[in-house]
Image (tube, rainbow over all chains, first blue to last red; front, side, top):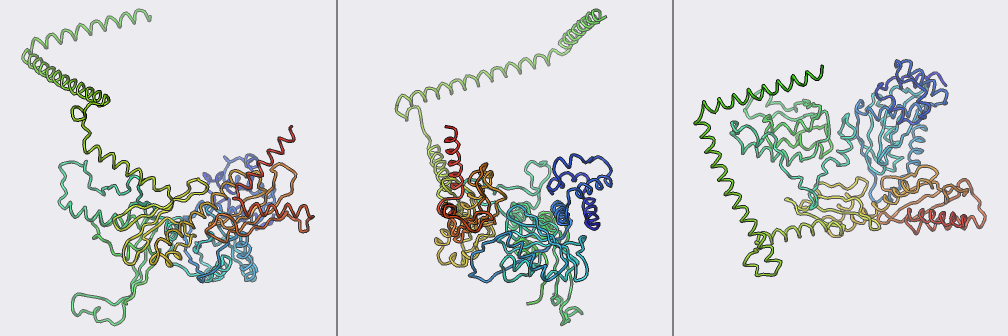
Length: 339
Length: 294
């Protein structure tokens, strides 16, 4: 086995936490059950990694096999990457999309390899007719850098693709082109949506996050859940503003629904607006140029935090539509200018 | 030894009993009033319970008589009254059941505060499959607030064309698309789960299940040559393919008999649902087995 490939195997396996080693190796499905049983998983990690690399060498594992292992690792640790969302479009009135996965992969590979001599492209099929693509970029004179790959997740016959953010931005247009042509679209644009939580991004753009519907069959999903107005609470506690509290609760439920919110870590607003003031005069009010400022809301779970604002008394209900439109519009980056 | 221990214990137990008895009798002597008060309270309690028991017994007797009377076709006025409320409740339960059963027509709905929630229940060959929902807001313009239609179904196109102008056409067309998708998906799932033995490799499919590609054998364990099939469903409202290509794997020129076989295979896939084709392969195999045995 090539030295660089062996090193790549070593570093990839080393990344895997001991607790997940067996699960990930099984998901990789390159080393058989019998082969895995010959390895002592209780030894120190460095020795274990050595044994596993030897096994891979014996089985003539290729660079592509290592790349697939890297994909499996990333699938288990998708939150370690930040994901961007791209939306593709095609001219209306086009033929029916007869998506052939093998054709897509061939086409994608051909386009990238035609433009870049040195590039490693690997595919792994996933559930729901999706594919994970791993791309290691090289250049005219340099071999691909296996340690800074880009991942793309594409669900067949949809206009959306999810890519892991990469510092090597120069290759993004080429990647977009390959995706667009291989999936038989005409245009691609980057959405103003970014998060670590790939599954939440998918829920947002596929509109899968609000899936409780009223039917005659279901037990009504509209049962009230009180956000702090507990009837069984101590009778010595009285709510002075019960009516207002109930209004706030109702408005919050109407805006955010009864479903768990998709998970985002931030929302960013870039303002370029003229300063508006009630007071006549003042230095800022006389400025002709717009004020530039950036407001960023961060949270381990932004939408749940926003949902809790009004009931907690921190903000008025209803919240600003700039905050509540996030999942609906599929945006968490906003640019606000004067009309 | 164990024997003396047991005897010792019983002696101790006996002493304990004597002690408690003494305490009790002393207590009785000390507080005669409380004892009396307790007694009288208990007596009144007993009287109360007796009265309640008699009342309940009378009620039970009354109801039993009522049931007997109604089953013997006696005048209902006398002993058995079906209250208006009970009639209404039964009607309501009936209506609810009918509304729930509407699901089986494939297209049903429930009024909401802002419009209607439409439910499209798909089916294929008598099997009830997935249901899809749409929350419509009845305003000018009529719009879809949210839905559970998969993203690869051309809902936006259809709604742009027909939602405002001809809602009936919109709903029926959407039903067609969703039922056909469900049917195609059902066939592909059946092939993968029930006839895996006939496949010589994974079934290639896509989200819409409108392109299926697979390599198969007519006999799972037999000596027959593998065939490659490619099914295209260009009409998204249909569950049968529009284009079928079957080739013998790795063979270009075929003798007449082989060519006939190949063409007949193509025809099978074009005219019968996918899993039925494989069922017929399985049955042929069974018949062959049986003929070999006999």
